[in-house]
Length: 221
Image (cartoon, rainbow, N blue to C red):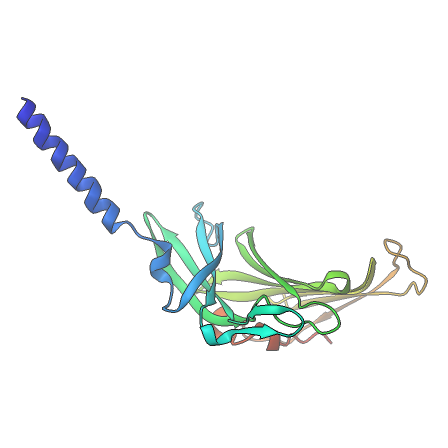
């Protein structure tokens, strides 16, 4: 009986060991020469399961430089990997390795816009914040095995004062522009003139096709 229990225990441990060795790792999806900069979890395809977005970053040593004023800077660009959870494993939805600039870019007179990514209401939001100068956000939806740009929002600020807000819905093809007409505004007392119009965009932009977000131009006028 003891011998039987011993054999059973060995078999059981062997199965666990094999399963552990075969267990999928998020790092299996990393391209060579990249590391995980950030992980974001959330449901992208409305199935009640958490999918995963990896913000990745290159590790090319030649792009690590020394700036006279700012010291050591890692100028390796960042990218994104979107993984959809299927029952007990992840499947690659898209990989865009270099679409984001590094976190160490020179912002000139101010600082470079700060990138943040989140998942909300099955949408992937890519946000850029420029401190007192405002922000802009790209909203993507998982569709046809890719993520497509369905919304864009931008706020142009001067400190606490909102000078202009732009909101575009690429699904309904509607654009709303709000411009502050209160020249003496101190913040939270803006008076907005609202203009509504239609846009003529035909095809939705795919996240996998965006080469560089810094060069992505959304028609605002």
